[in-house]
Structures are given as C-alpha cells and as structure tokens.
Image (cartoon, rainbow, N blue to C red):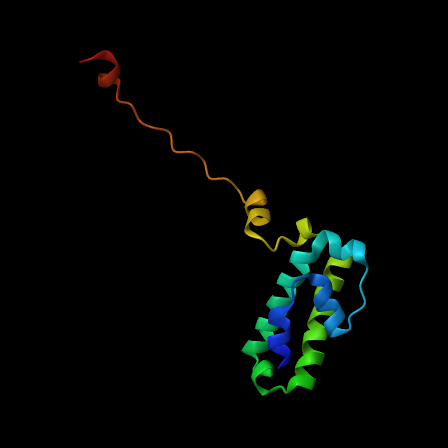
Length: 113
C-alpha cells in the first residue's frame, strides 16, 4: 500500500501526526484540527504544481508530507484559526458588506396620479 493510500484511510488529525512522525500538542490539534489538515492540503497542492508529488517515491513522499504537516501545525501554533481564515465562513465574516439596493418608488405611485 502506498503512502497516499494510507493517508486516505486515516480518520483523525492525530492519525496523520502519528503516521508522519510529527510531534504535536493535543490542545493545539483539538482547536485547529481541520484548519491544520486543510493548510497541509494547500501546501501539498503547491508541491503538486511544482511536480514534487509525481516524481517522489514513498520515502520522499513521507518526508514531504511530514514537512508540510509540521509547517501547517506551526502556522496554528503561531496563529489562530480565526486569524488564518481558511474556511469560507471565516472569510465571509470579515468581508465588506455591499450597500443594500433601495427600491425606487415614483411619487405618482404614492399619490395615485
């Protein structure tokens, strides 16, 4: 079974940390588990664009995934999920709201004439 197959079968953030041999503080993971894994995915997509994933064997892939997980974890040790705004709900919370369109009612419609 390849490393990518093993990663697909994992069911918790802690499983990723254990498989890839990355040390972690359970309190940080408890608060930011989805954010850490999403950021790791972003880093992996960046590596995929650079061609690193296709050319890597399992040993290199293991090191690359571990490096990206450690980097993602470090992002959330130094920051918070709200500050990083990885998910749409967090981005929308600070997005400027457009001015509502006010309906136009002609004066004739009000006076009946």
